[in-house]
Length: 274
Length: 274
Image (cartoon, rainbow over all chains, first blue to last red; front, side):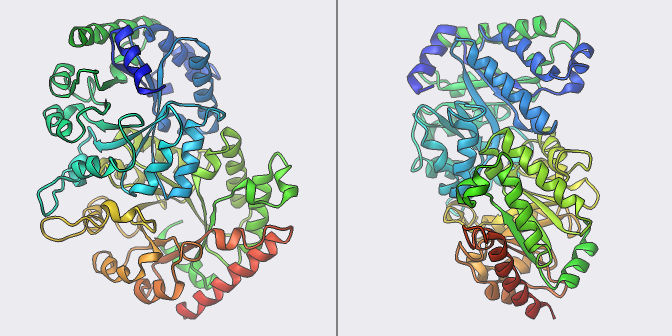
């Protein structure tokens, strides 16, 4: 999905919500835990309940890999289901990959190739290994690399905020340097919501780029703060909520509860979009 | 495999060679390309041909993921085969993972859990997200996290060598900070062979830690240089070669050719071990 299609989708749905599919079998309703494809069934119900309120889904690869090959099979079923719906929605492999050039090429193929098992629109990538670890993700037309800049966890303080001799924090250096590797049509950035006021600094470096903002809800970030500091006139935001939506209830009404929570966020977002 | 067992294995085999299983179907002999489990058959032949010359195998996850779920099934067959041999050998998931704490926990389970599909001894992890992204990999007894410090690619210069206000490059800050997260018994570091003289600086920060050194051979690093600057009295090195061994021939004699190349490196290593 290219930039214009994404912006149109956001305007149409009046939403820039991304639903994080961090599906944990132990948190699913009991009757799904007993099914061999319970993870897929859970995801399908969440998707059906939320797709009119959101513009993106973001499966977190770790949750599927932790279930072994069987987990990846259920991720593939989930992606096949999304692609079968005939409703446009942006898909993000939250995979945090990145390696030397010939290896990143293969990760790009694994997640972005239209002929591959998953055919995501985008993948999250860690910047530590630099240019050749990131560029292979920018070559698929209409597909995106989402580079980690400033993450929402405590550990973000260990290196991302380290300042160089000129006083520039590492995450800002990542923003600036990465502009040589991609552009606003194929590169987004992860910026954590728990540091919303820092979005002002981020916007100084990447004024028009889309930002994927995790950490709203369970991780403590505020949607209004994120919008105040991060919104552009083309929106420029995908705000993720995972646990707050998919585990809104752990009973048989989990899908209805997810629908209600997604709708609440969508309405709050609509008031910011105008 | 714990530190003492690894050191004993190195002494016994007179080798600290790690064979990188970056298996690319297009580079396998034609008769294997036609087999449904050709990647596994290739790996099995390479393992049989090299196990007496090496102490570790390092499948590069991207090469398997690029083949979809089928590729991971062949990786599992490869790991099952290694575990069935009854010969001790260290196994490394070259996966470059790392995410917020609750997510890294799941990546650790995916690769290190003895009850999981793969049961590796170690996994490579990117440090960008800091403490909570790395610590979950240190909790499995006898298992290891191998943290990226200074990689062998061009992109290493983009951020890893950025110096802070005190003149300390980022990779040295990673070495120092990470000592709060693990120790010489559960943490190793990736240090690229193409920067062998920098091993002197690395050893100042982590004098006794094991280093995983990629980049010997195809990427241009020299084994003797690595030993000169990196070897400790307990060895402290795992030196990886991938393409130079597994693609030593692309004909039907690929396994014999791999055996010869692995043996050459082993003999060069034996002269350094004493």
